[in-house]
Structure formats: structure tokens, C-alpha cells
Length: 394
Ligand SMILES: Cc1ncc(COP(=O)(O)O)c(C=O)c1O
Image (cartoon, rainbow, N blue to C red; front, side):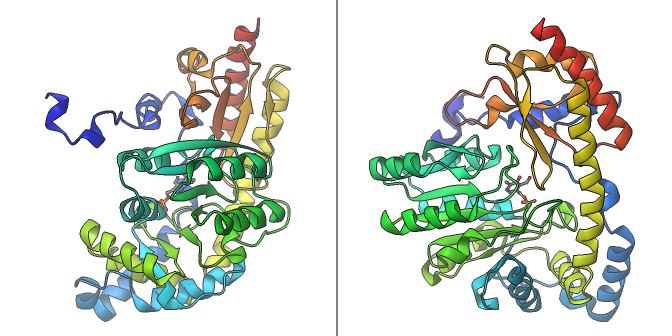
């Protein structure tokens, strides 16, 4: 069909590069480090089965009825209580339940962005966020950072020059780089947002998956009015429940997000919300997270060891304290996009890092996921990839 049949904002929307890659990696003989999927063994299937049965037996008709856009009140209460572990003090009416935290990104775009508005994004940044903001015809302004987050001087210069509507960041165990913002950088971002009258989206779906180091307070705690905090149960219960949340202390922003959500999906699945609420109310979440973290910590460590053993000298990687990803930097002259087809021939896949850069660059980087593979696959896959990389280096 001719492109001009579609809205202009969709003309240049290419399909998600990762989804294209995932198609290749669906082949059962390929070991995939490409997706960002939790381990299926981490899903509490039996508990959810029991809870769903109890809920439907006790209150089936209400679970299956329409609900309020803001979310099921007891879940909003439970979330307001849960986020205290992140240092966030809030009340249930400042919590909005979302159909995954990704919906929060879309609703922020819907609420704030006109064509040509600017958004500051990390370099590299979460790919789907880039696509969402682009779908609202925003101009993306990538700003460099390091292992502690945005570079404060570069961020201030960009704020001054571009007057963006908001700054987007993944504060803890970043996707794709695995880094965590230091306390000082969190403070600095919050301070700069206030100075330049701009908002911040703190996207934090991985913060509870910590395997080493100390917890850091949410960036929102440094400026509760200006920072919209997005959290998710996808990585700590199950992504298929599509249940996430936003803590939005600013009432005007909250109202716009609620109106946006009404149009998008009326409300998040009542059944999912009640399952998550019961999971929290029964006090199951901390123990469940601990079990997941034990498994993922062992996987992270094994992948790090395997990279050490099999990857060529000249490749470097970040050792993350949590999350699902390792970020690898190859020597400058090797393109991970060129490596990819050769790696797939050797039956191993990853995501070339260039896809996470809003305006080009990063060709010599790649992202590896360690949560979804088995221990054996982690070792075999790293050996295969190491062999391919050595070929390219030679
Ligand atoms: C940085 C980041 N934000 C948001 C999401 C979306 O998560 P959810 O399943 O809560 O929509 C993901 C999922 O991978 C992510 O990596």
C-alpha cells in the first residue's frame, strides 16, 4: 500500500529491529542472547493458578467487569506500599496502574509531545522508547553518559540548547548497557530538570533485580513533582500479566495520563491487577524476587566467566550489578551488524548495539541477555560467539 495512505508519523516507522532479529532466533537450534525475556522457570505458575482460582471463585463477576482507569484501588494501595523499598513515599491516589510500564512511555508521549518537540534520550537508549517518542514525531536529542549515567555537562548543554519537554532515562540496570545511575547523578538530573523547567521519565523495570552492590534511592525521590516514575511487575512476576504502574505526584500530569489511558485501553486487565494485588498482599514478592535473583546472579556470573574465557582480547564489557544484560564493546573497526549473520550461521544470536543509538554510532557494540538461556547454553553460546569474533579480529 502507498505510504501516504498512512499518517505521516508512521511513514518512517520501521518494524522493531529486535523483533526482526527475534524471528531469526526463534529457530530452535539458535542459542539466543538477543531478547530481553525473563527465564520462563521464574514464572510463579502454580501460585498464580491458585490465586486466579480463588479470586474467580470468590469474586468472579467483579473481576470480569469493567474497572476504573486509574486502577484497582487495593492494588494502588499495595504499590504505594511496595515502592517504599525504592525510597519513594507516595499515596495510592498518586499511583496509576498501567498495562505494562511501556504504556507509561506511550502515555507520556501522548500527553506531552507535539511534532518537533524535543526529548532528551540516553546514548544508547531503550529501543522501544525511541520508537514510541518518534511515533509522536518528537526530535530525539541523544546525550552521552558513562557508567554513572548522563554526563552532567553534556546534559546541561542539551537542556540549554534544546528546551526539551522531558528527559528519558533508565535509572537502574540500564537496558541496554546495564549501568546504574549513581546517587550524585540522580541528584544532578533532578536539579537540572528543575533549573530548565523540564520533566523526567524514570523508567525502572529492572531495579529489583540486584545481584551485588547497594540499593540506590529512586531518582524520583530527588524531585517528586518533576519525575514520573515507571515501575513494572513484568520482570519480577510475569510479563504476560501486563501489569506495571506509574507514580505521578503532579496532579496535572496524572490527569492527562488518565485521559490518555481511557482512550488507549479503558483500564488494565482486572484479573491481572487482582492477581498482582494478592501476590503482594500475601507477602510473596520479596521471597520470589530473592529466588529469581539467585538464578540470574549465577547466570550473570557464568556469562561473565564465559566471556573472559572465549572472547578475544580487545573486547570489553560492563559488569552490571543487576538486570538482564551485558553490554560489550568491540574494537572500533568491527561492526556487530556485520558479525550478526555470521553468528547466526554458528547458531548464536545477540542484538547489535547500533540499534539503540538514536542518531547513529555504536556499530562496534552489542547487547547480550543472560536471563533466558540455560547454564549450558550460556557457555556454549559464548564459546560460539567468541569464535566468530576471533575470526573478525583476525
Ligand atoms: C527499559 C524498559 N522499559 C520498559 C519496558 C517495558 O516493560 P513492561 O513489560 O513493563 O511494559 C522494558 C521491557 O523490556 C524495558 O527494557
